[in-house]
Image 1 (cartoon, rainbow, N blue to C red):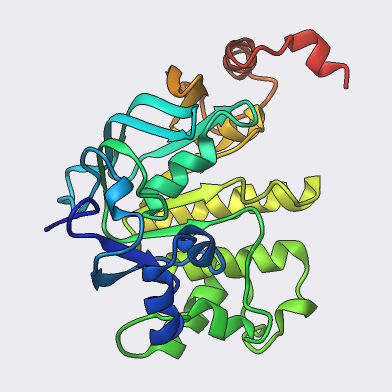
Image 2 (image 1 turned 90 degrees about the vertical axis):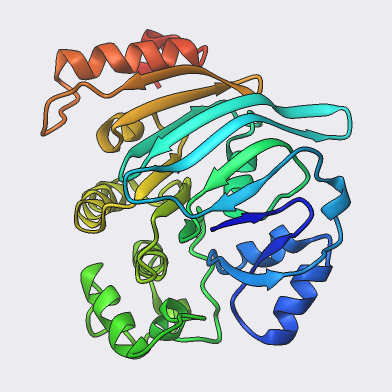
Length: 302
């Protein structure tokens, strides 16, 4: 069932209280409100401020198990005179892990906000799986709610607490259900964020540099955890990163966003386990760095 974000806006809001959902649906800053938790849900059809700004068609549609989790055609997003996304086309298959690279300001996060339903001021055709979750660079946990409460925030259905505990155990945080966010390390907080995203069994997970603020050793552990979680749950993933090595280690396919369009789209044909010493890894790394305008040898001297 397709939900149009043009005339019949299916507003994406933070799942907290009814009053907050109403406020988010009415306010021009819906994106900022929803990003606070990184959890999205449909809040019913409602005419919202900003609907008239949406030229063209933006849709959030449920796809069949064999269909695409993301299908974008001719996506354009401008902020005043500055065009950030300019006729972008993108398809992400069900269960596919796609990494998105690009220079700062290239529009990577803007694309994720559009796919998450946070940004409706667009032109073009956008379809994304209805069941989707977002994980940001900061864990964005509610400080007044314990770890379990952050995971189960707005979670529908029965046995919510049991499902939340199982999700925390899956990310290695069994026994930490009652921990306050302030007591968690950076890596633990991002584990809670991953649990919060995956407990909803999404068909699409959008990750916006989720490991960018972590130290090197913690990032390695989180890479292993994310690969295992994706193997178990099989969501489609769009993973934004500035780290070329991270993209190659994790993804089935790597894209480069340049001047509002995808300038490069390459499969990751590197044997597992993916090792940086593998010539195929090095060759792909050099190709991606060149597309990003980075000298491979100079980059390696830092």
